[in-house]
Amino acid sequence: MRIVLGCDHGGYPAKESVISFLENNNIKVTDCGTDGLSSVDYPDFAKKVCKEILSGRADLGILICGTGIGMSIAANKYKGIRAAVVYDEFTAKACKEHNNANILCLGSRVLDNDKIIKLIGIWLNSVYEGGRHDKRLEKITEIENREL
Image 1 (spheres, rainbow, N blue to C red):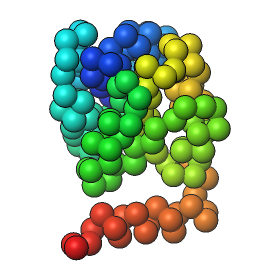
Image 2: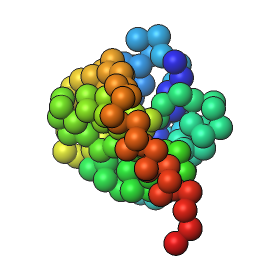
Image 3: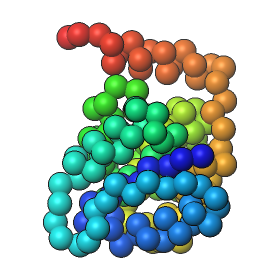
């Protein structure tokens, strides 16, 4: 499995522990930055992560900012991306099982590092259920493909 990781300055404090967790679980990680606490714009890092997934160079992505909200808004602008903000065990599991989320968005200002790692583990170990959820994802694809 290949995971691409991106964060802004708000998510930077959690990044190194996330990378260590993934690598310790034999997951190949591509780090798209940022590399410090200096203020940066989260859409730039969401774009980098989405490009890696949509190109096929990564299977899944993780985006971390202060709340996870900004990253999810930016990432969900890309056709084929299903980015979900999670904040507890249920949302981490459900976003994969029901929505087949290919990007997990987390907030390092609202979750501590241990919780972030726990939620990533739950997401990675969950499996898309398909079935009744397929038609819902098809409707999302229809929305992505239509012109207003």
